Image (cartoon, rainbow, N blue to C red; front, side):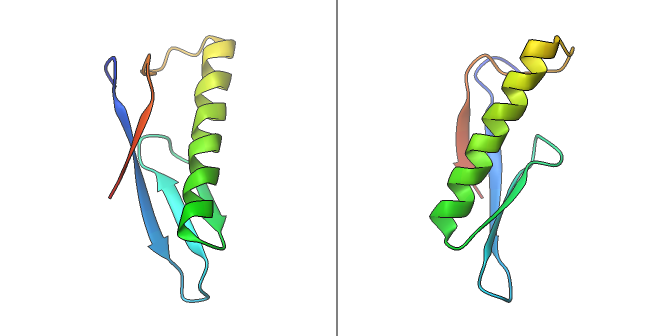
Length: 72
């Protein structure tokens, strides 16, 4: 990712009614919520935690310097 990259969040409703949100650029960042908004908020928060953790541990990953989210 380059400076100012966006994270893409894919939202989908499961057959049981729950929503699932997945951040495409961060494998494993996947969250469920009772509503679309809840799943999105949880995924955004988890993505920020993952990015912060990677910055703190000095992982050499393509981490954006600014974070934005877009829905698909």
